[in-house]
Length: 348
Image (cartoon, rainbow, N blue to C red; front, top):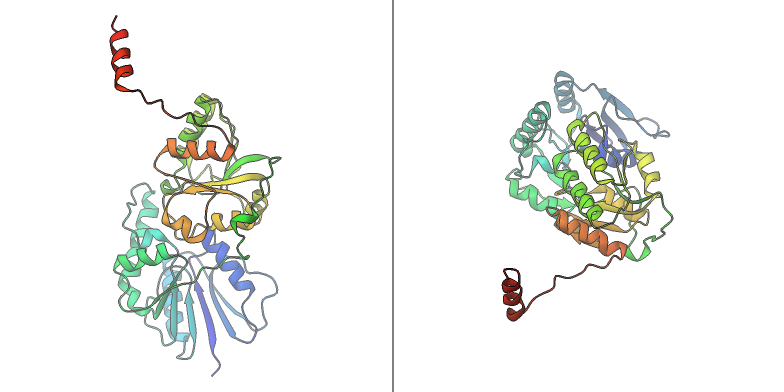
């Protein structure tokens, strides 16, 4: 029997997962039997090869369990299975199974307390699924060294190999090819959803510090207001209080995000952890300079023009000033005589 490729992605339809899955579907070879098990909300590219079998799965627990059973019944020994949604098969399959892991919340020991209850339950179940069914995978694939380290440290992997195989929709552009034009709509953009680890509050606090020093760079955010009601209200309050040049344009389709990069002078990226950090890659592909957290996941994929401590609004503000060419006045160090002289004169 001919080899078939099963792409099992029943929980992928938006965000970074969708941005990576779609270009993968666009380049599937014609000489390989292709079976796609997809969420009903996942768009399929036009011009797919003839003979592609697409099985649609509604986003319900029962439908997804049925899809797992269907997979176990239909995969044969010569088949290749790519599980694209972080999770290994629920049942042991006869074919070769590769699990693509891209959700760091499933492998890092980080709190889920900042998420809504529904999300905490889902991530908790997926953590148990990954650790309990990892034995059903023949190999794992991640995109960065940081993600490989986190996966190996999680204890999920038994003896399977973990490969680092980063990919994106376009080839990378080196730091020497960044575009430093100033006539842009925004000085900075931050392409990110509103989860706590995306670190919007410290970023906006840095903008408040800059405003206090007479610096008002423009900043564009891509928050979904309905999904981040409390965060959005807090940001709007700071915007009014400090007169910040800050605009939130909402959650955009990926095609519009790509267009957004052309409207900015630079990307700023204060996220505290990522499995890949796709906007870093996309911004570099668009020729944007990048200011990013001084963390391993960033330097796994790019060399930023400026870096900062993501836990410090002061550090973020200083990196912005360095990029903008604003001089930082160093702290004046007194000698012992001057120190005592001031101490005495203030009491005279």
